[in-house]
Length: 398
Image (cartoon, rainbow, N blue to C red; front, side, top):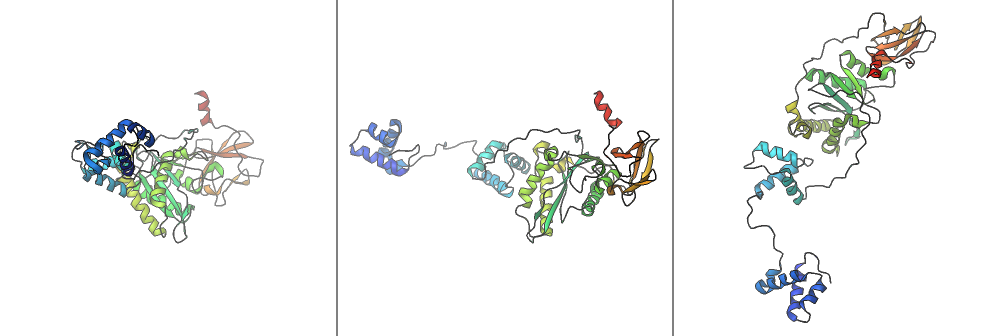
């Protein structure tokens, strides 16, 4: 029979009883039980000194340890973990520090060991690191409200079978989550209501970064949508990440993962219940959760309202001398060279500037955004531009 590294008590008793019978030598019995002679003699001595009680495994911990964490604080650590299952040792350590820990704060590794012994640590699947794609000329957030990230988390159905599209907005500098709204769809009208509320409450950002999906962008002229045209008329700069590369909006996508784990799974009974859950989660994320990217500060400690208020009127773009200006009709068309030319319904009511390139065609701009080309003899609308705008020629000289 094989004696394991740590013997069951029954195996130890059988071993010492066979030793006492003297049918086999101690060396031979040790080979049979698969243990060293040193281990065999240890159990023989304990049996002869203490009887059967000596067969029990003894703790290797010292009788007293001045560095051992008291049970009171072990319980406190476990309570924090049970309250915030997704929080790791570093975050829990910060909370303990804020609440007042008598004496030195246990290291994050010590807290991790306590949680591991309590069975509260789940092994994480290692994710394969993606190769970083071209990040593009994105603005690096240097202050609150410099860059906001916007997206939909991905729709799901609430308990009553209704579709829920969570619209999320965060400040990339402070990681502050400005809004998480449980919406019934991704329409322009519903999204605009959300942003009107956010702009009224927090003011305007300098830049908004989004993906290429509706309602933030479109496949029309300049990739503009009704929502992005409205943002531009408010004086906000737009940045679009590359299609299929959510990592270009990395911190916002990471927040989405946390949101899904803590506030979407499982879904709530209905929209109202789901929104209450989102509100509670956002408050905790902003005001209670330490953030490693912020040197373990909380987003609410880093964020403040924008200095730019939500204006009562829109700011129309102006164009340099020599540009012809036309206002886009409700049909999405302008009149040029005696014909109606389709520009895009997203731009209805907005002024566009036409820059003459040669005697046969012009480039069409909305502010600084090149929409495309119009050919005088062509009755169709915009075509993709075949000329590189002057603003891009600077890159060739770098």
